[in-house]
Length: 81
Image (cartoon, rainbow, N blue to C red; front, side, top):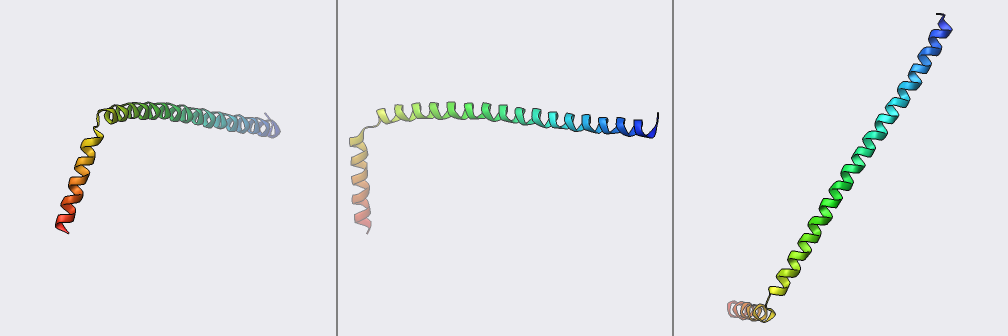
């Protein structure tokens, strides 16, 4: 094989290697994007569950009791001051 033939083969090899590196990079980017999407779905589900729990807790709260405690704290604070 001549020098020109070797040089041409080497250039093709480098081109193929560059394409392969590009494909690997793209696959890694896709994998990262998929993992990010999965993480986002988990976070959204946790937020939904938390919102449900908060709504349930708010329904169980007695506003009158909270107001009585708030007034008692205010009175205690005034007595100390």
